[in-house]
Image (cartoon, rainbow, N blue to C red; front, side):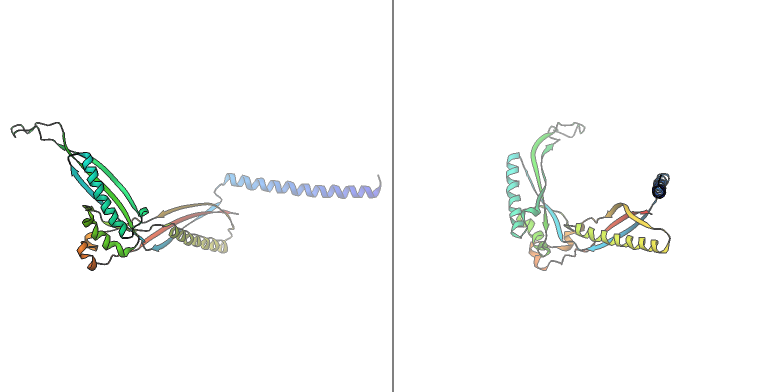
Length: 260
């Protein structure tokens, strides 16, 4: 074999051995890290932080009912529907849109007499089979009030319009998701700050985020006693101002980072 060819062959063989050795070492190191992760799958570090946002309610909710009693079910329904339509017409005249008016209950129940067969009190233990003597229809509607200046006017006028039962008023946030996002961002910034500080002050090197979980405290509506906030229809002009208060929306984020 020619000497030049022989030298070239040995050089090629040497390069091949070096490349092969590097490949074997890399493959071995990769498998070592994989095995290490299998043996110790918790090569992660977790941070938990809370984000808070103070929000002011932007809608008020109240519900009212029309209750009608009578002997004939069809007559009771017709009368009740007529009365309720009058109340709804009043509400709409105050600027409440149809999308913010919702029927939450419509129940027609028989009324019974359990004493119809008793002629004296000699045998008080005598029981009578229930006898239907009439019907009671309760129709309830919930309304959202977006213009708080209309609260006193609406509440004060419901009874005059025909409602014979009015619930307390509550205040809440109609679209809380924007506030939740603000709280999430605040919590995430706190976590990133902690992760950067830990990486800077220790030998730990953090990799990619491997998991994120969330929990939150989303406030219940704020209830106000109607007697304490509004008067009757005649007293509307001098009614006390409505204090809506504020609500705290809290989101807790738990983020896990890979440890390199």
